Length: 188
Image 1 (tube, helix red, strand yellow):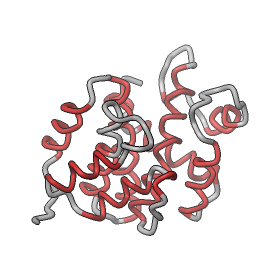
Image 2 (cartoon, rainbow, N blue to C red; image 1 turned 180 degrees about the vertical axis):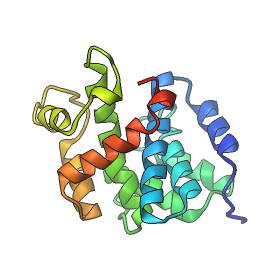
Image 3 (cartoon, one colour; image 1 turned 90 degrees about the horizontal axis):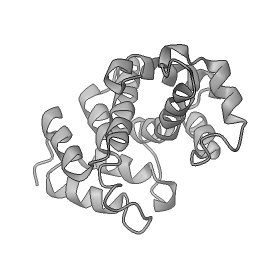
Image 4 (cartoon, helix red, strand yellow; image 1 turned 120 degrees about the horizontal axis):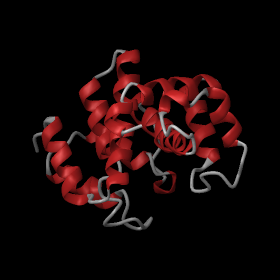
């Protein structure tokens, strides 16, 4: 099987084919933006990292349960010839799969997935609803509030930073900068 990386347009079309909800599409865009940002900082393959972020949850709307997500999506990606390193990272972003995160790609995907969604939630409670008005202090304050964005696993956020080997505040700040860099695409 040929494992070349499809184009960004092909990946976007795949996301849209399986994901109708604008919020889930924006989540894919947010994680893609973070992944591209971190790939540039690390001198990694920005296209591979970006598409991994864009597609990590493309199957979630159809198969949101742990028995199917992200397994169904990874099966589809394999049939379409997406690289194994991408598929393994996508499996590893869901802790319940038991797939270990061994590559920088996999560790970064896990580290930005929950946090990027959390940062969006913080932006949405601002009067301006803009990422420009979100700061590190506000994000760390909200992380301590269990009732705020209850669906975001604080343990996953902390574990993500630990796996990257960076202090949590540093990781939050970098992810916030990454999100700001694509705020127009996110409408934030």
